[in-house]
Length: 463
Image (cartoon, rainbow, N blue to C red):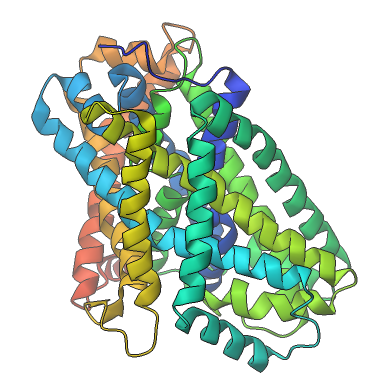
């Protein structure tokens, strides 16, 4: 079953750095602040932490187990784990999710490169909020400039992947994850002297339960899955690179706590500036690219702060995109029996086309729409609401109900090194709690399409 010619992470720190790099991405730095802003700040954070600890970690461990036991790409690992090709369809679903996520992800990553260049050139100094809004809208609508930066990002991504798992992904992650943490701490530290620090800290740390609705819980689930790269083949692929002697539970908990810590630090790095200048924290996705640049320019040392912030975005985007693209490279290489360089070329071409379409969908009078939304917006929402939860649901059902108990115990206890009660608790969550919660939220998402918020109705009945 094992493929000894496959790459692997050379050490526990290397595995944690690479997997944390996948988890700590734009989902924490770009997406978390505005999603939290739209859903009540600290109340959303607490729900997000609860879902991460009780739902996402068991799902993450299920994906790790499938990958390490299956010793293959997402499709092949499902087949090897079960001995049935039918289960490989779930791997294909997750690979489809990987393509959808990267389609919009690489566009946003390209934006970060544009803004690094503008920050270095001092392009935000003296700009009003209105001017910043117009400049960003013109940049996005231009079509060709976002595409050029997206291609540059894809080339960088492919260059790292071309060096392989150990020399490329692991080595890059060992540098970038500590760098991400240091930059976030520095940015949060700068805000200690901001007049809006107390208000910003309270927003991210003091719950406002009146803002909680079914949308909040669904957003927290989608955010947690998105942050941990669950349901998009990445963690199954990375799980296949974790060496046998490493504890999957230890790696999973450390990575999950790292994503929560990074999300909190991102909030502390962003919201104090937002409140200091009287900006609404519910500005949506525009918060990072429209609102923050002119605010940074007003801070002492704002020139360097702006550069550091967008380098942070680039690092976060790169470490995550490496894992998602690697899932495609592993699939094409192993299933088509071709050299890694050709598998990388196929993955590059697919993401180039899909990301170009996403970028073009934001141009004025674009007809690249799905359900009245731009392709860029639709891919993000569709993945978070459907593909990622469905992939995670399939994983916990497979590991909890269909895989022989001795196989699951062997993987989750690392051959007896982990206490049995921890293993039993995780399996209980996989079998009974995670599927129920994910199904309820999926049903709520479907009903929400028709204007019915099932969770909000249940909460009103409880009250």
